[in-house]
Length: 117
Image 1 (tube, rainbow, N blue to C red):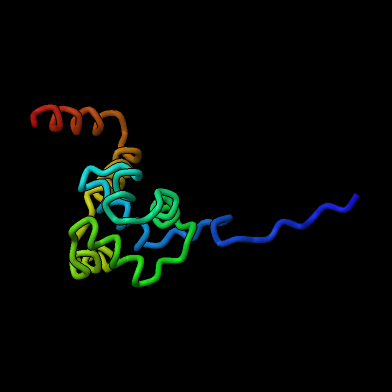
Image 2: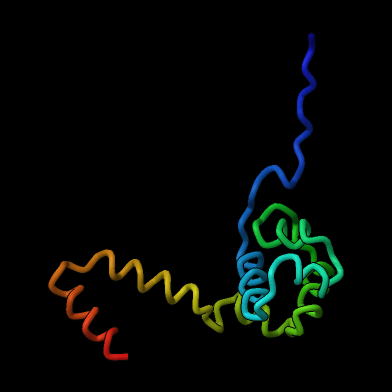
């Protein structure tokens, strides 16, 4: 019995772009779940999920539709994409990497400092 070769679809593989990461960040800043974001934007939750996880191509009309639904401007979006404005998640990840490199004594010092906030 012959088996059919599965047709490759764009959603079968990920290409994580900065745009996809920013779209997810913007949704999270509005405190929207994927389902609620889909309702607000007028797309399926699958489309929102695929857009945020690099499983679909992000064309300008899709990006604008999502930005309008989230009430962000294209300029705000591009400032995050181009790195002119830093996303807090990037700062967090950078701090975690720094902490991983510290020895125990320096880590205790950092812990003391953080506990004072």
